[in-house]
Image 1 (cartoon, rainbow, N blue to C red):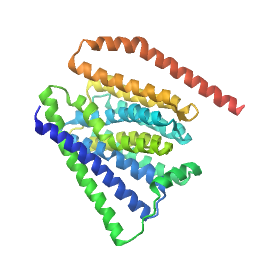
Image 2 (image 1 turned 90 degrees about the horizontal axis):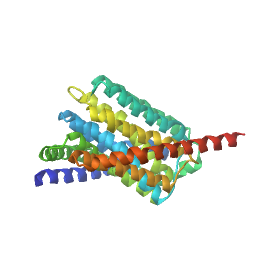
Image 3 (image 1 turned 180 degrees about the horizontal axis):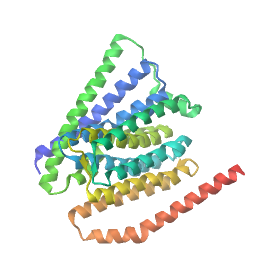
Image 4 (image 1 turned 90 degrees about the vertical axis):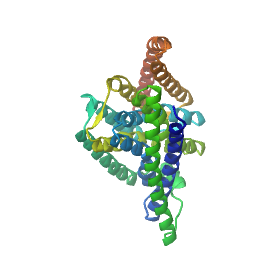
Length: 365
């Protein structure tokens, strides 16, 4: 493992984070100057901005012929977003979940995750698959704009207004400054993704591990840093709708736009390995499905549910590390998960779902 490769990874991550921040800042201020509502800015421009590193890395890796990195980046980022970011955020403060997320956005997230698995079942995400996913991203964006215009919850509107509604005077200097932020952010994203992909491929080759594992771990964590910062800061400020909405929106954008665009641009599509189809993508889907009963319990993610998410994330990554090392502890971990963790999880979710349904039924009565 060369120092140059490690420096490329670290430098690439730094450029991605700074680039995403510059892009979000410039684009959101331009949108404010043009009169867009803070709610729509938060739901679309900021969500796209925090997903920009995933898109940049996925496109760069697919063009370079490293489809495993592109796929692993999206799958790993979505797992990281739900299990670690929501887990940490809910430890800071129990997170409120808007009713729209439970009724619409979480089912959409589950649906697009299942669609991704369906498209990859033949072992490849083709250009036609990518076109369908990317068109779905456009439709979802239009849907968010439509929903944002119909949002009448004053608390939700006030929360987004306090974060994204800061007045920006329309002037030549302000316009050029914020356009500069957007351009610089885009350049840093492209440069950072190039460094990160090249460095990660070099490390994978030196260590003899698959590019999929690199994408699922190092790269996915790095590209999810903007979502982590946004959600943690939102939690500390008490902006609990933003903390949750940022994660759900980002996961949907990652699949529809980042992976969709990468599949469209890949010369021969993105190859999906058996391990990704049989293990990693199902884990991502399981994490998305787990959101539904947890979010529906009083529309709050409690601290103990956040701890549950963190335990799952640590377990998943422990499995990846032990399996990559061919460590004998993998059999012990598999036994523990199969004997205790999985059954207890199923029982917990059944109880949560039953209580939620009973509460809703008694409320109607």
